[in-house]
Length: 229
Image (cartoon, rainbow, N blue to C red; front, side):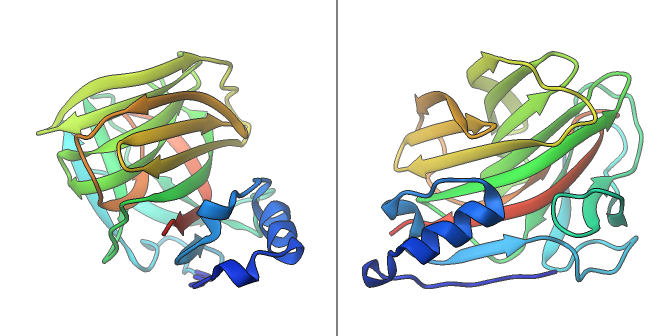
């Protein structure tokens, strides 16, 4: 696992920084996004078939708990390794989580690439943020069966939709989910395009991680978190 921690001041806002970020992630970063600590997780130095270092498995809902591993595949966005939840269970209200240990972010941007491979009940992947515990967090998710992107606040284990957009989410293709959080403002992006923005103050800070639903078999790669100051 490659983790890069960067404390970047205003004097370092140069063309080279923009070019590097754009080349690595296909994202245009604003000035506010490139202040503060930056973490990048590509999973390529992690051991295959093991939980990625620095993460913990968590779970919301009913059914079997998740089993997360690093897996080597062809044509991953960066090198060869991805992360996947392999335990299949068709329980509808089942949400395996993979959460980053020991961090908490209030104002930040984060993005993840996901590819929905299969699933009878669901084919979904999501980005968890402002995670307090396994029953309290936000999640921005894309669903290849429903062809939509939705934002949920999970409070005491109960989901409440607070934003959404119908859009094509093609199975077996890589997609990008991104959030930018500033105070109670949450901007949500799909494929580099902002699909909606909401104001919600349910959670003001917390960790970041990955999310799946029911029997979804979904690959994840290139998790990036950029703190804003």
